[in-house]
Length: 150
Image (cartoon, rainbow, N blue to C red; front, side, top):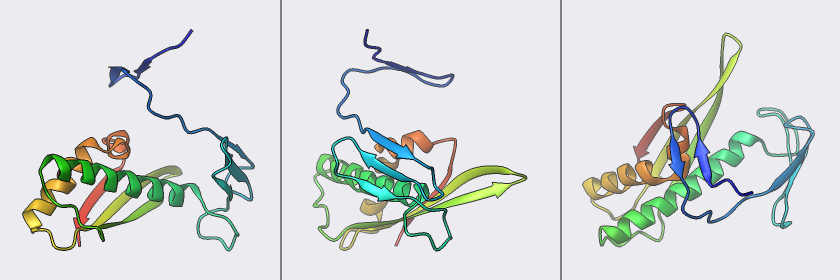
């Protein structure tokens, strides 16, 4: 039986359609492990952040995913606003792995470059994207986030 409902204490949303399901298999964790996608398009080695290991880490993957998704959300917002989206737009995502009193948590900065756009228009695009991007939605209330226009 298929369950099309996501629920937690704060949100109970009926799903109309699942657009895509990413499937990965990970072994070993961040200390010398590896991860690969079910379709074979992703195959990576993992290492602990800040060490000389040969792999990437979950924070880098999260930053890459979030920045790509955020650009997509800005493109949708630009289309709805009838604004030409700059071909050389970029997001430099910074995701910090933090620790306070033994508790780990994340904080992030999305540094957004929208060359050629009026600053108010650019701010409107980033504000809208931050409300609609699935990564931004999933971190809201859980991760301190700064959106900076550069």
